[in-house]
Length: 169
Image (cartoon, rainbow, N blue to C red; front, side):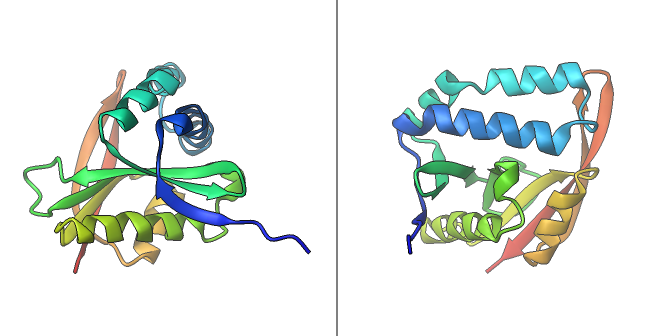
């Protein structure tokens, strides 16, 4: 019988290629048919290995969920960027490769990111999700997030609605 190690840990510069690949796969799966094709390609291509290497080296908070020797997902988080929302922390991104979704890994990654924010003194937090991304909105509701705001974001000519979910300690 073999055992597979599953861990959440801070990303290292050596993870940049794997995080970029995870970002590519997860975004294609999550946003195909939601974000217009050309815009989706631009967004994915901007976040290649060099971008992730730079972000990690500059100290951006990026955690990876590693399954065996494969990066299965990542979370990027820090201080809340929306000044109109009175929450201290924010998970900017939380994505899993499609084959690792629905197995509890997202919850594990979310919990680790939230714990890190709490340990940094950020007692409340928010996450934004596109309204049309049903799996994401259902995921955040299932984790106890309460909807606190609505907004929209332009992707080329298309404006998409997004919602903010919040948690307080």
